[in-house]
Length: 534
Ligand code: BG6
Image (cartoon, rainbow, N blue to C red; front, side, top):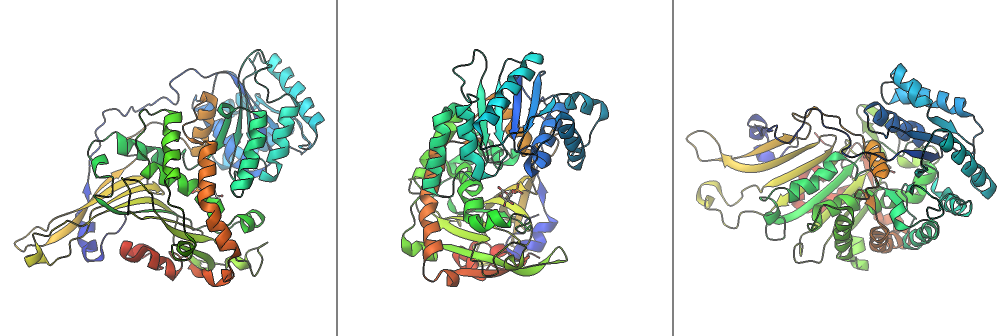
């Protein structure tokens, strides 16, 4: 449970008011998909890699075992590694049980749909050979030719792979008699505005926008999607969702993990590229966008883009004052000593790459004028925590001032994304007893309470939506460009200013970030002011 104002903590714990969930609308055996799915072939580029084994194939297997895939489907792995169908099947058989249970009978049928064909990403002839291979197995399996190309490859291979998909005719939907072709691409979508535009130009030369699915796995989280339902399916919150009632909004995505084995990538990316341009911007968009006229992919994405367009650009002064960057030092996480970022394997011992950032951003609109949004993300923080915190304004006039003084704690609404998937609302009520005193109480809704249906992991949801052709949870290019356009000046400033090393604040692993981050957020929330969570 999230603790509230210190003076009320003890009381609050004691009187936690639980809201009850009515079963209306929640089916105990909710179906995974409502409409018939098209038969298709899912081609995974990078099939010998980590993402395929850790996420993609386990997600496909789980979907399959829950009846979430079309009756006819094939999964074709491809990568540089020489391997046959059996080798690929064996590899996947070993990988899946690390993430979910493997049922022998189901595996047998699932495995019979797995194929493998090696590809050298730089050779167009290899893609032509893949094209012939795909046509052959599709014909054998009576598939219509719908295809998904999932690029689970290092970003450095995106361009050449996309170009070769084009040159070999694999991307050409128009020339084929039947079916659709879709391409799925993971972040990072470039490393700044220029490279993002360049990557997009390559994509668009070979695919139409409606064929492109740019993944942000945060968007596929149930609780992230639920932010829009919460805002737009209730009449009581939206009237308060503006500058008249909200004092500030904080969005935090804290991780206790460090850089792990991704030194090469992370040294180049840092937290701004790794978390802000994508996940943080999407959480921000869900929280701050205007209601679309219809819950439909293009209208939702239009509203997000409108919001990104109203982000107030940082001036060079703001960049120094309203963006705090940090890097983790050694410390203790869950009782275990962990090294400083600079001591991690593969990291430059003098690295200036930020692993933490907090920034204060404003939206220039009637709804949000003057309301700061504090976006914070970091590695090796006190614990894993993703939350959207809406801090409401103080009451305009305290009628209790003669008995209670001027201060009355403000209302706070927290949308917990992970690990606690819940919504809590804190408000004031009277303490029982003869004395007049207030207490903060919290209404607490657990997202999964009373729900017995299947819960989809983010990759399962992403794959389902690509098969269904639904773009709602994917980035559109204009959104990517606007968010890079907003962040690129900050990146340039942080990476080139003469006092770069003075602007990087170190924080102990296992804390809530560097001390100066607390200054940005001022009285905002005691939890984030550089203190270890208690
Ligand atoms: C990824 C980042 O996109 O998201 C990682 O590259 C980060 O650095 C991860 O750890 C966080 O995702 P999650 O699902 O663990 O919150």
